[in-house]
Length: 247
Image (cartoon, rainbow, N blue to C red; front, side, top):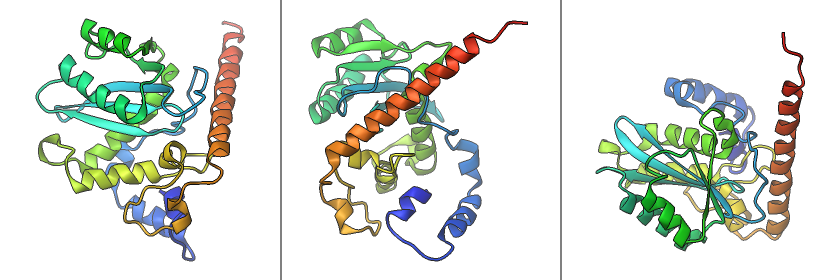
């Protein structure tokens, strides 16, 4: 919230005012993603956007949703299945994502029934996509999916339409705000990393943010290095834990 505000406006005491405003929304504390959400990554970072993606299914108030997210940029897509998540409906959404962003080399899932059916395995095979299953006993190994699901759940709880539908201005604007919010440390948003610029969402912002960034490639490289550094830190932490003497 603060990172997004800093891109658009400023007044003396802005951070205190925003923290006070945030404290008025008790539902945020109940459903907000736990921090830090971006550090738990145990696979080599991608070399380009949408090379490695994650997908996960979840429910909110009886409604079934699917998250599709890019590991490198943090770009997020959400699909709603009001009449059940059958394989043909799931593959239709994937087909749309692939045609828009390109087919990934690898997709990570938790091995849930909906995403691991014979039909879905055959679909991914036709597109040349390798499926990677994260451990059910160690979900942090699919950390990007965990972060994406938490963000999506928080976003949807306050903005989805009656019956869980996503087709509303409120949901679309909330999604745009997520895509335009800078990630930790890199200070660039998913939209800047994926498209080289901010997306116009109605919030006042400097025009330079809406133009394609001259240093886009450099920024993507910085993101790769940051993800690799986080991965190495987690590997070192795991090694330290393994080396502790048992009681």
